[in-house]
Image (cartoon, rainbow, N blue to C red; front, side, top):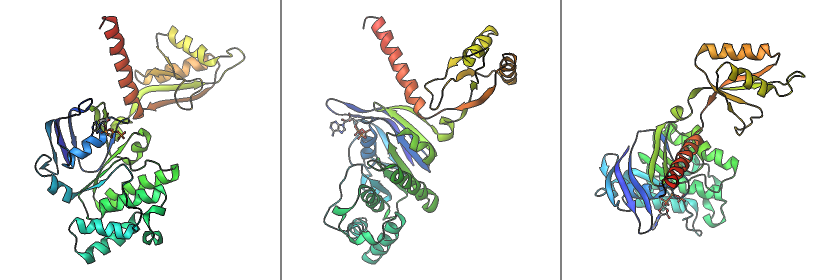
Length: 324
Ligand SMILES: Nc1ncnc2c1ncn2[C@@H]1O[C@H](COP(=O)(O)OP(=O)(O)OP(=O)(O)O)[C@@H](O)[C@H]1O
């Protein structure tokens, strides 16, 4: 669907994209990054609306530098910011956008009615957009991106400004764009959690650089890290500490799991195999404590950012240490 090769975009004061090489396959792909990471810049280059400073990119096999118009015929775009005319209705606006994409008048009206129904706008589609809620406006922006039946859509922060219910509805709609119509989706977000459930694949960028590109399951796959929680007892008022000491005495390293969501007294350790499970069970039984839980931990996408921050902090400290 999309391929970029050492793509860079430099503004006078900022490098928005820095030698980004990434491939995007059909399906729903999340483009994740903090504000200013370069997501919108990448979309504008992929649409052929803004030239890259260096490198190259193709969308649906078309070169963005020379085939911008052909790309925009086949790709839908939902921009991030509010850009809707307040004094026309959703129907008038989406019909207009369908006509701009080359649909004849009757087809444009039919496709508009279908698309607005699909995004969940019914009677209100005849009222001026100026009176719409944020959620309704986001749906109009989505409808105009879909009305010409594109092969691929770029959705720039479609959940921005929505409350939790509106956000869930929008994420459901995005998933259905692919499952119901076979349209591939590139959706940007600075909220990592929401993409775990919606996307097949996630591309993470930071400061215009590629941090990681992999399937969502790879991001969140089960690790061999075990989380252990135990009860306390009269003999061991701090059960967690007692288990930790006993494990250390048997040469097993543990980390403190506090800071994990929902974790109270949680120990983390790396399982070396079946024996580790047996050892933990025996240690806890010997101490006369109760095992509340012993489970494999799953990664969250947010850890990619944390790891990266830690790496950067480490490099910074190293740089300071070297007097630079
Ligand atoms: N036209 C421009 N002129 C100068 N700098 C720009 C321009 N457009 C973007 N930038 C800068 O490039 C960087 C990347 O911006 P971009 O909008 O692509 O980020 P983003 O990941 O989409 O974040 P956001 O969600 O906040 O828009 C930012 O530092 C931004 O200030």
